[in-house]
Length: 259
Image (cartoon, rainbow, N blue to C red; front, side, top):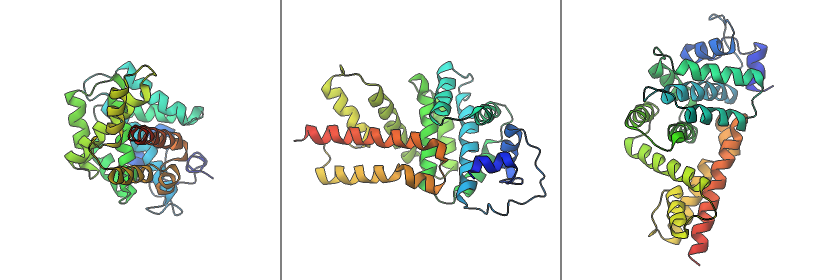
């Protein structure tokens, strides 16, 4: 049975405990007994991490969407697009929306949520990076990253263990990926090639060997099966597939341009 099936079936007890457990409890409409222990979900258990990822992602998306003081239609659409890609059923979708709405509340316990989320992920850096990339994409939903959103991302990144430099690299890469995926066949070839380099986070002077090494590293970081094994909810595998497709297309364009 999947993490979601166990949640609905009550097999998680109070699930994670702490702020993440309380947040999901309210969103899923359960009244969990704080005295129960999820004996089959010890820290590090894949299904437990999947539950934590789902809970943290949609709630912090809501928090970030409101960071600039308003939630734009494009930010809501981004959240809805992710839900659509996940093929959520009616109950899952309702829970994701409730988590998003809880993240928008003034008393949303961001620091507590991120602290527990980092612990639950237990040094799964690639999983935490995917979490940040989803949030960055949410902030870029309206094709711009304003100061308030940037500051919020800096705070979130720091709390889950990423430096400012690492965050900036991710912001540049995610922004480039979104532009690259939206480009039309009429896009100027030079502009498209520049975007392809940005998707991989490298400059045009990189050597062929270093380019291949970067490509392989990025593909490994976003490999769907590896991410699911580390705790990415299986419903989010399409997001990882999309990432790897963008990385591969960019690499192939660069490689072909060098022939």
